Structures are given as C-alpha cells and as structure tokens.
Length: 307
Image (cartoon, rainbow, N blue to C red; front, side, top):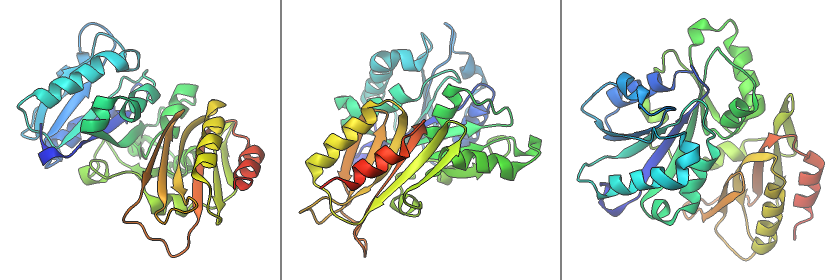
C-alpha cells in the first residue's frame, strides 16, 4: 500500500442516477496529482461503468464489486476488496468509492467506523454527493444529501436558478460545503484528502435553529457548560435510536477533560475523537443533527438537561 504506516483517506462519491458521478470520477483521476485507487460497483453481472472510466498516470486500479449493489455486499466483498488493496504492491495515496445511484450510502460509510481492518488501515475522509438538475426529492436522494460533507451542484449550465437550488440544498444539510460545477469540473484539492470534519463549519452554525426542506431538515444545538462524557454518549445513543437522524457532527467539551472532542455519526454509528490541536478561546459544545422529521424541542430540552 502506501503512506509509510499511515491510514489511507477514502472518499465516497454518491448521487442519484444521472447526476454525473462517473464524469466527476473521470475528472478527478485525470487531473489530480495523487495516485488514486477506485472501488466501483454497478448493478448487473458486468461492471458497465468500467468502460467509461478513463486511464491516467494517477490511476492505480479498479476493484469492481459488480456482483451486487455495494450496500448489500458492504460487509463482504467491499472489505475483502480493501484487504486485497492493502496486500497489493501498487502504491496509492487515496481511495475513491463510487456507489451505484441506487445505493444507500449509510452501510458503506458505517463500515469505516465499525470494521476493525478498515479502522486500522483506512479512514473516511469525505462523503461527496453529486446533485444535478434532475433533482428528485425521494427518500434515497435526500439521505444521500443529508450524509454529505460536500455537495456538488453539477450541470449548473442547465439550471434556471442556481441560487434557488443551493438554498434548497443548504436547507437539507447546512453543515455541508456546497460547490457548483459543470461536467464534474472541480479542483481535486476541494474534494480529496480534505479531512472533511470542520470544527469551524460546525461552530459557525447558529444554535437552536432548525432548517427545513419539507419534512427533511437539520437542528443545531449549543451549550457553554461542560458535559459528562458517559451521560452524553447515553443521550446520543438514545437520540440516534429513533432512526430519524441520518448524520450528526459537532464538537463537545467534556467535564474534567481539557481537550474538546469531535463527534461524527452516520445513522447509529458513533465516532468520538479528541482534537489535540484545537484550543478554542471559549469552551462550548455544538452539535448539528441532519435527518427526517427531527423533534427540535426534544433534542433541545434533553441536550440542555445533560449534566
């Protein structure tokens, strides 16, 4: 593999059918100065998308999981594919997973929080969701947008009102970075190896507010008092068990712990890491929940009641 003993960043590219995921992938592997390995999947027994993926000096290999939708095989051949990659002699700096347009992103992302081998050798760097003019607000599409760290508004040349589209996307996921592009033409440095968890991005969100796009939306919470770590994790697990939250991220200050901690959740999988290099002037905890039919009052009151 590569990275002199370090873990390899993984970027998940998702988006509904026809949004331009493969076009984006082609652009990234042809313009990035990184050695990229691609893991692809497609419905059917033949990896059709492989035909459309161009070759370049930065492109290492394609591992196809075409025997089924990746979300159905995520605990099987995707993990095996990554084990094969780690044992190969090919060197690469980054991995991109391109999911089928009909795939759920959640099981793929959760593997990087749950599987011991993936945890030791790779880390989820960012979820990139491609949205085009063919915006169809079905549950799968909104979940793909809600989970995103970066949303690419593709095919802007075909949009009548780009500003309105961006407003819609921000209503669904205010914690994501929204980038406009045409034919997937975006600077690779904006989407690859970016360490997508942004303390500044979360802290800039206004506390105790809710953004709604029909029944989907986000709730941002904030408090200045330190929180007991065990009480917080119990509370967070309870909130996530309700099944309406797709993504949660934020910064939490625990009692008797000097270093603030980052919180990343994909559905019910939780990852908490201490931010050793983050030293805020004012200690405060900030969380944003993104999902469907979120209960702001319950979230706000129960969060405020934590000791």
